[in-house]
Length: 137
Image (tube, rainbow, N blue to C red; front, side, top):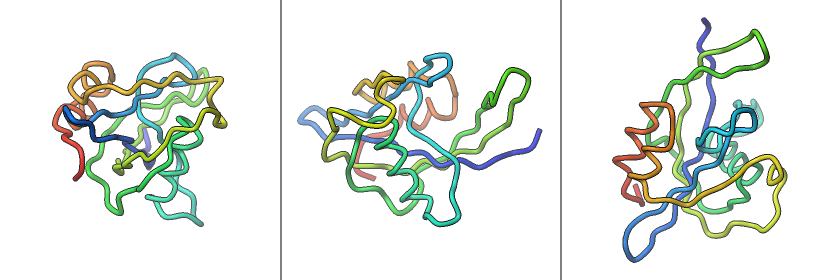
């Protein structure tokens, strides 16, 4: 199986008791994950991750210039087609979450503590990164 590249944003906010991260559901099975998408030749990976965060979760903020980690997962493209993806994760310090965004009708969002987020996602490498996340990198 060919390894494809994706980029993701890890939206977070700092609170008085620690960081919260934003999870979204996938459109197909409704599993918890983070906003991600396919690279585009006319955009930097960081800018694309920020765009995905807005389109999939309505979040805007300051995107980190470098990835803070990576995870592998298998993406279902359609009924009999899957690809293995390597996902670079960029931190996004959220400044606002809009009331309306392009994919709002097809996804749920939830702000949670990183340790709780780690128990909600299926991918073990993403869970490990979430479990260790403490906020501002």
